[in-house]
Length: 341
Image (cartoon, rainbow, N blue to C red; front, top):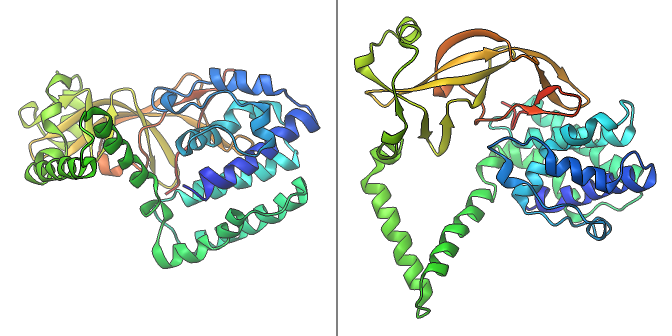
């Protein structure tokens, strides 16, 4: 988080934007801001859109973005502006290597071959940074070269990154603003935290699925036949929902999820079913993916969202959190995966 989204991303993105808007002038900063603010981020990422970029922030090499906003900006940058960039542009190839590094670092699992490939990418990224931008490497660029060794010793970085710890701050800050007394506020916050933790422990079975919050999302099943065909259960043995929270992730009808079966498969959630043993299944329809576009580093989705097949799948079969299909300039539908597998 601190090395990438609050460090290297600022240097790389500022250099990129200055190069394209001032040096070769492929597009203007106003065009970038217009596209960035009007891009179809989808419901899941709309809250993470950063404010317009100002020129004086570029030359200070620090954009006015939080780590989560920077994460969103870098993730969608290729879709926002990629159609204006020539295919053989060297600086764009540098950016594509950079986002491949980020995508790799966000993986849940690693093989030794993946770590070796990551090491090669980082070495090329750092050498190209000096070559193309005539700038010295910063301390956080140096830290990047140690990531492959750390991964071999400690596992995927996302299992010990700071995002979740930083997010916990928000909860305590909300309490602090609501408390009118300022006498020993640390003790008050500690007590509130312990009460909440005790409640969580006493209600662990409920909290695993937040079942008590699902009543208002209960619906009548519209796929009785296909559910019986795939998992052999009748309507008496499950409840259908339009929205559910499972292991901290919210899923709802209309979301898209992916599964890796020798190749990436994209599915749209049609119905969520909860069995009596608290097992979660999705009724899904597979959406046709046309190809992987290396220029955008994204998958191109069939413009008509053609349905390949319908099925019922266990929630654990999916490799990604819910994501959106994004409409880019030119009318194409693209999807950028949030992590690799």
